[in-house]
Image 1: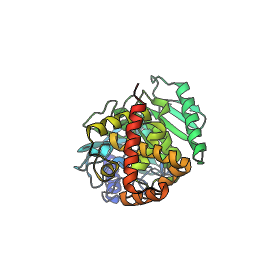
Image 2: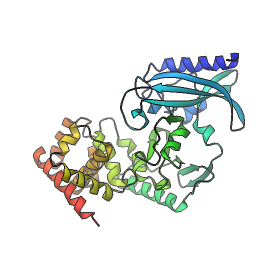
Image 3: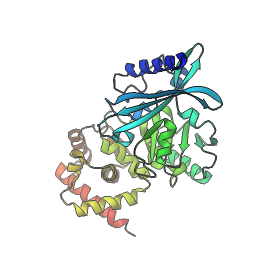
Image 4: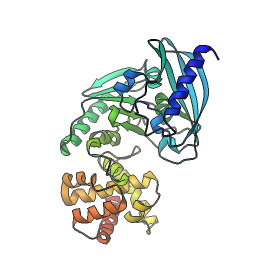
Length: 350
């Protein structure tokens, strides 16, 4: 290893040590070793580490000179190993992370892979959204316009700020979506099961599902609803309301409701209680929360749905809040929810 590469290696080692194994929670912690312009641009600036599970162990694989965007920089490849489970990339046993080292005055600092991997991509501005996509990507301007209209409608309905700026990355697969962030795993997702990522604090959206592409309504809803989410919000609500508004995993709400209805018909012992307290896949949790939002909306409109975000993050808090809000005992709410789920599943059968 050359003296210059060794210097870069030490910078990366020091940065890793500063995180104390808490990669996600420290992804926005200020650092003298990271490019200041990226820290100013993106409050959650360490884009890849945000998706690395707590306690994952890093092993530096290589530090090599490379040509990136017409410049000679250092590419750092690190393998993170963990047995932890979690959503998206964090559920994997191992993941490779790429960052770059760039010259800043008289020293080396770290930078994200994203600007380097998308520097030759095209851009198209539609209202407050700037779409970024590879030269060969089949960009659809009509869907982009519908995305802006959808975002505006949600913001107006919920009396929340409209989008003022959003950088929206369009990729051909989930694997490419993760790769431009700097993440590569041993398992390839192709076009499922996760379709997109939103980072509201950074004003970023990443779409890995070309069937939705420019109009990823679930993630757009996350961005609009961010001001009222998520400190005291149940996961069922934080994902259920965007599913109710914009669907999930390439499905609209109607399709997701049909899937939930079929699951409940095959599993009569499953209830809203068991979903709140158990370990079910997102394919069940998301539409279950969406059905709850639909039920609450019928009883109290948008104001009541907004109230769900402050209902509490624990099952106990959410149950108590719903009893107060709906004026019904929990046993009755459980029955209401199941009946609504089955009714929606039947309604949407074609």
